Length: 567
Image (cartoon, rainbow, N blue to C red; front, side):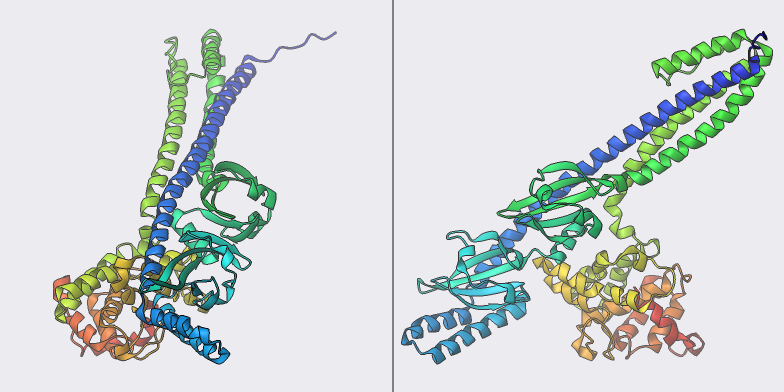
């Protein structure tokens, strides 16, 4: 019978060292993974709660503004006169006269709606009969008065066509109640997208166990059954499809509710990938070091190796990696191995600290994400504002107009908040479809600013800064002096900064070339007066002016100006 040959010391030491390294790195990996995921989960939940507080305050403000707006509109004298005439002459009982009176009321209501652009603006008689409706959703407004409770002037109502926030005010003349004016805002897909942009999370608007609007992917929305939707608590963690989502109730009113959803897996993915990569690199280095060190130590001394092995085992059991292993002092090789192991463990601890620090930095960077979506346009709005004010001074604008111009130009690209990154940051030429998406940003920016009353004077700059004197601009195709002067100035300043700033698809161009191109297109694409004022203002901007006779710079100007319109 053959006696079993024991393994060589080199093999035994190598296996043991590798086992210790694997245990240590596994413990570190598990600790980093669990800690990172828990940190991400807590951060996502905290972010949703912060978003809930912000949006709740915003909704209360919107409710107050809606109530104040309808109260103001209810004082419209022509509408009161039409309602008073309807009430006075209705007793005659003539159907023809009644239709004429209702037509008068609808006409006055339409005039008000044309100015305020509401979703629904409706008038009811004092008996609750719907007399007229206007607005983009007027056909969806019910003739049933029961959906508005007596004495409630602001609430959410659920109709077959959707969910609406509605406020109403009494229309009275000489202490006689003539009826009431209703002002409603639809909680539709556009509303959900607006909330999603403000909070950074996905939104679901639900009513009677059904989803009215959602910014979640369709496959995720489809995996949320009505029963689960109806039972969602104020805050929870749920599983939808293959991902975990943190949910937060933003507000609930009657049958309507608005929830925020944020994917924990999507938020944790980048941080987890960095952590795993760091640990794997450390593991590969540790394995290589362990193999060489174990072979050297096995050939020299068994006792020091055994002592070191026991020290490693004790460290693994205690899970205490902060204290370095003491040097044995028996040989330089063993001390070198001990020092290498201590260095490795410091790297593991440092990697974990760096990973957490990087994630905290990413969270803080969200505060400046909107202004830094495209590194090539960082600071663009501030520069356009400064250039616009300089041009306005050359054109003799007063201080009030300059202040409107300054802020309007600063906000001119606010609508790009709704343009996706793959279009906004595309390095090459845009397709026709992508350019159509870009062209929506003036109208979207105007819509955003219209919800803020004190920014009303700046809306024309934001909405019309891409209109052209030849009528080929957007979004409305205005021409010549149909375009407000401040919008024409912002258009010229926008183009000048776009040409003189570096882009992904070209380097920055000298100010002289920029002025030459603007002169080449003056009167067609750009307002000529504003271009000449910019030329006079160039010395204030620390650039050298160029004569309009610089023909050599005009070659290809019309072709290159198409690139300017992206910004």
